[in-house]
Image (cartoon, rainbow, N blue to C red; front, side, top):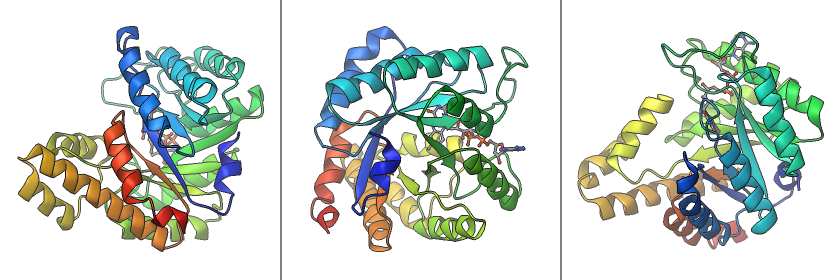
Length: 289
Ligand code: FAD
C-alpha cells in the first residue's frame, strides 16, 4: 500500500526506522530487531540507505522482508549524491522488482573532501524524484529541515528549494529530528505559507545516551533546548536513567504534537525495539483518540 494513502486517513499513524547492516554478517541481528519492531504494528517501517550505496542491497532486502514476510508496509530510503545515474536507476529497478511501493528520495550528505564517482550523477534530491517517477508508480517521500539544512545560510532559500522538490512529485515529507516543538510549528506555518501542502511527518529521535546526542548534533546541527540539556546533565552518567528520561522526553514531544493536531509521527527508533516498544506503550491510550 502507498504510504500517502495511509497518511490521508483520519487517524494517527506512528512509523519507525531501522538501518541496514553494513555487512551481510550483521543481517540476522538487524532482521531480529526489525521483526520485533514489526510486532508493534507500526503504520510502516523505513529502512535507511548507507551513504555511498554500499549497503543498498541490504536496504532493499530488509524493506522487502518487512513488506512481504512481516506484512508491514516499508519505505526504502535511496540517496543519489555518491552514485552514478546508472547505479541509481538499477537500485530503483530492483526496488520495483521487489514490489516496494514507497521510496524516500534523498541526496545524501556531502562531506568535505568527498570524491564523486562521476559528474554523471543526480546533484539534488528533486532530480532523483524526477527519475523515480520515470520508473513507475511509486509513492515518493523526501526530507525537510525545520531548523534549515546545514548547507543553507538562508532559511528562505531552503524553503524555496523544498517547494521545487515537492513540485517535482513528492507525496509526503519527513523532518530532520528536532527537540523543540515550537521550531516545528513555526516551520509548518512557513512552508504552508509557501504553498507546500503535502503531509509532513515530524521525525522524533528518542535520545538514550550522551554519545547519541553528540552524534545527532554533529549530523543535523539541531539545537538542544535547556530542558533537554538538564536531563543530560543530571542523568547522562546513568545509562538506565538516561534511557528512561530520553524516552520520556520523546514521548512528551509526541503527545504535544498529537495534542496540536499532528496526525502522523515518524520515530527514529534505529534498531532498538525496546525503545520503540516503550514509546508505543506510553502512547497506547492517546493514539486511540
Ligand atoms: P536536497 O533536497 O537535495 O537538499 C540539499 C541541499 O541543497 C539543501 O541545502 C537545499 O536547500 C539545497 N538545494 C536543493 N535544491 C537546490 C537547487 N536546485 N539549487 C541549489 N541548492 C539546492 N542520509 C543518508 O545517507 N541515508 C539515509 O537513509 C538518510 N535518511 C534521511 C531521512 C530523513 C528524514 C532526513 C531528514 C535525512 C536523511 N538523510 C539520509 C540525510 C540527508 O541525505 C542529508 O540531510 C543531505 O545533506 C540532504 O539530503 P536532501 O535529500 O534533503 O537534499
